[in-house]
Image 1: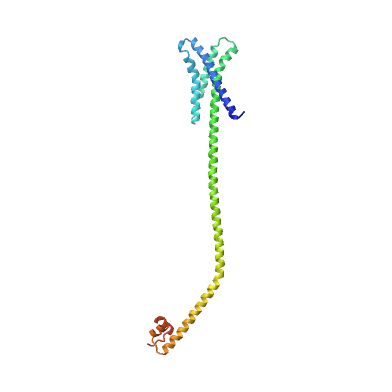
Image 2: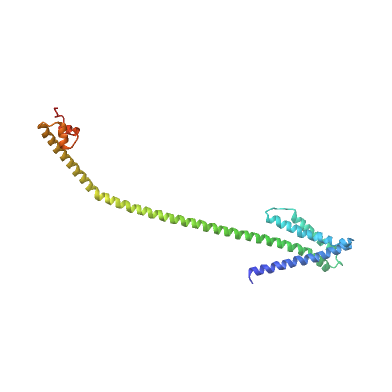
Length: 239
């Protein structure tokens, strides 16, 4: 037998206990009302007294489910139950102890049935809340886990990019180490060549000057500016 089936059978028997106790207690209180002269209104007496236990129990349950606390309801329920037991015992057909016990038990069973029912509903509500809380927690864990996986993936990408940059850096360093000496040599050769050309032009400028050419003519022949020619001649210009 599964837990759900046991719970279903327990609930059905609890309902039977409550209904049966209510009917038996109703009968006893109805007899008290008839003997007290209520006449056709006699049925109202047990309805009021027995229903009070039911109504107060339902109000108590509702308050508990809403998170409120009412310290007066429980004493009222117990008082109604005690009054019902007292009236039934006092109205017992005889003074026999067994007879008095028989008429006293229905109100007690009614109280016990509703007390048990209230406890069961509270436990079911707490369990449902706990299940919901667990489901929410699992959902939050899944969400956080998903976010964590995204972060791990993003971190892996960053690590990959860093490794790529390291490889590129090392390759660039190797390239610089390999090409720098050649570039330095090229710059040295180029500088020496330019100096050699400048010296050659300087000699040409001096030679042209000695032949009587003007600065402008020398600049045209060497394809340079007059200022450059003057720098070549270094103050030797006489005209």
